[in-house]
Image 1 (cartoon, rainbow, N blue to C red):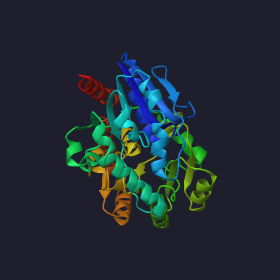
Image 2 (image 1 turned 180 degrees about the vertical axis):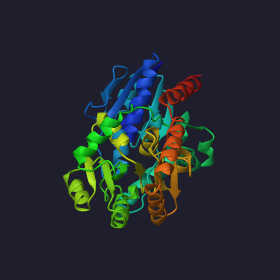
Image 3 (image 1 turned 90 degrees about the vertical axis):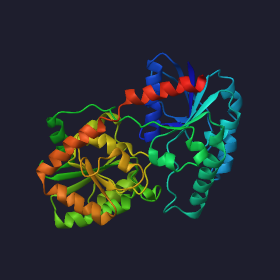
Image 4 (image 1 turned 90 degrees about the horizontal axis):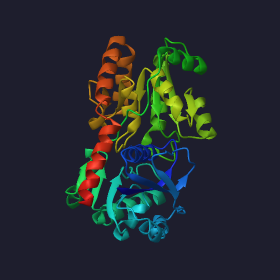
Length: 366
């Protein structure tokens, strides 16, 4: 089958981009002819199993203008001869009414507007309204990556929506010697309890990620227990690094994908103070490495964390801090929850994800 994926970007370090890469790669391995169309790419995400083509679309701080820019590619996309299009991100949902093929809208979630300036909140409100009240009704089918996201759709759209969870088995483990190697690079002993966060590091650009709150919480924890350290890894710049290091946080900016297994293996507990998540891939990745997790009871977290078994989901920052202290003080509890975490993460396999996408393909075409 000839399939196209349409997305804003294909760059390493972004969860949605990695998900598209895995699904497109999986379908290509099964004999489908797959092309990914992206506005921006640095070719760090690419595969022998799919083509990558540019549909350069100029971003605009005025989101309706971005929608219009995306629609200028309709002639080209309709001439490509694809039988099915997976439309993955803004602003390409605006193409759904006029694509001349079966279409599947894959919604990874419209993030919370909490903490953003007024103009950005207005853009997020526009995006949510246009997708859920207009564009998505033109899709043959809709895919959501969690039940939480599906529950936020209008009832009419829920009837044609399938929940397909992301996989999390894309990293291989590392041996114990690698754990000590990274700790030596970071300048911390093996007996130091290492907390890990993976994701966007800038507290202003994505305030709902809760990085400022996490750093503040860490400061209080370290005052009580100097043997606790926090490592924050993810997309950021030198200014982000300077801020985090000034707060005593260990930082790795823009870590390459091949380093992530070592990073996950090295930590003792995975933590996140994010206040909105449509799936939260890093919290599942951490569990796949047998790490207990601590986060807030929000978004899709109750679906991807086995609460009180693979981790703790708190209702407040204070509750998170108490859960971290409890795990820090009990080696056996950390070990037991780590085993539960690994078992829980085994539910999220890319082969299963691609199976569901392939079944959906045949349903849409038939």
